[in-house]
Length: 164
Image (cartoon, rainbow, N blue to C red; front, top):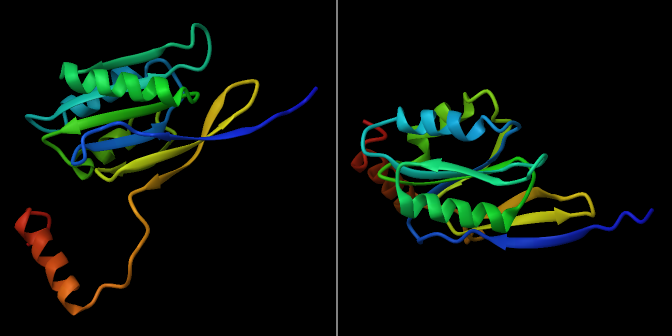
């Protein structure tokens, strides 16, 4: 039996400033539990979540509270088609606002990334199926921050309310 392996890169399709979380889970209940975690993480959060079922009918399961975000999540999940992966696309929240709640969902095994950066997902495909090897989250580093960069970082965190 030949065990072939093909590597693919899947670019996540989303608006430039939209935040997302990509992770791995293990059960059909994932969609409902992530929905509850997102919906109770803060007022005004809009989101769509999609989960790639990897046995039985192998459907993309989905939920959310915004039709546009649900559609984006469904389309990205279908492009990934990687067993037990999930994607959340969100507005009116940052991943830092919801990430601990998502990590506490019993079905969630791990998080690949939580970002607003452009994301490329490295997929391995065999005769059996597809899996996520890793992600390219944003662009390569261009240097080391200097004193002005440090001051700007600290100012930004205080301006957006994450530090006092």
